[in-house]
Length: 102
Image (cartoon, rainbow, N blue to C red; front, side, top):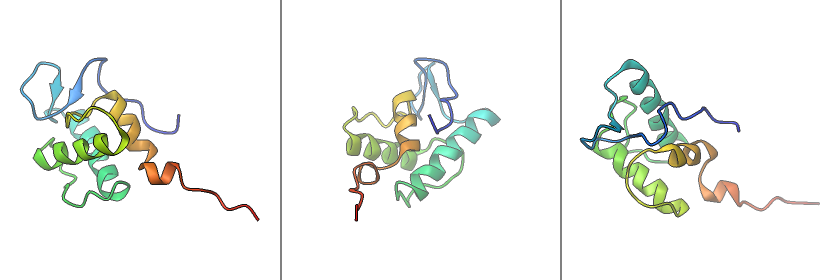
């Protein structure tokens, strides 16, 4: 595994939803994790509307939903453990690009 471990307890996620298991970036550690995910969304997934603020805002939730749609996950917009792993692997076109053999 070449990506950082999901930083929340099992069954928790990053989201702007009001739920006891959803985290928005209230603590420094949450904010740093969200900011890292936002940077992946921008630089790897091309989601230029996202800003690396460390706050799980609407633009982040929409971008996460787009990533989920692209890889065939249920589209929730919540950054859960499965979606976290996908962010660090990269877009499907990077995973299935044919290699050239001479």
